Image (cartoon, rainbow, N blue to C red; front, side):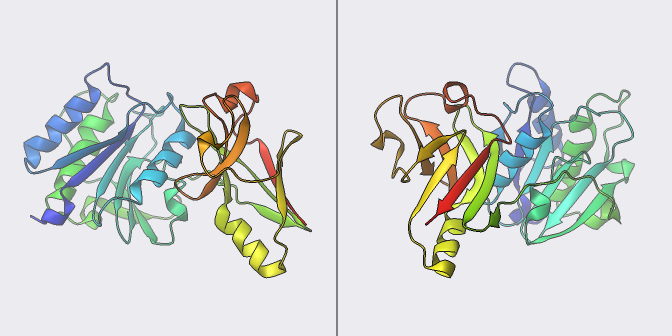
Length: 268
């Protein structure tokens, strides 16, 4: 057994009320009693593939090499959608082929996707509503026991993904958008501080201001409470991206923001 593969994470929309996650862990422990579990989140909004994809990408980068990530937001469970393993240079991702791994596919270390078809690794059960337990969990367990990813099926290239927007620059304006809203109502954008730094370095223009929904923010906040309670601002978050927030408030509700909302950085 390759002990390096013992860490298995879970990202789902199951919540914590039902037995779903516990059953998955039970299956895995029955195959690999040495498995170590980490719950990234079970509070993904029901059927929110985009949100799950973002959370998985944001968290997975901090796990050790050879970690196995099981991600299940699966409105098409039981249908013809395929179970897959995505392989990067560091991790394995087991999920339905419904776009959930779209953010992962942007990883420079992403290498291939395997369509899981080797059903002798599945649980011998009747029913098609719980592939997380019956397919994904045992595959994760056997993968953690040292079975190579290619043993579970054939490589495919027509896997499903949705478009991940990237910031664009036109003239002296960098335009991005809100890609995720967390439980606090903070609105995370796809504009990174590195994008700003590179533009400043390239053009020599050091002054800039940020705009969204006709609101102008002249400077970045160094931390949330640097503003008065209830005041909106923009901070660089823990992953290096611009985040619209309201100090001790909910930016989504107070500023009426939503995913896809545009943000501009105007230079000069």
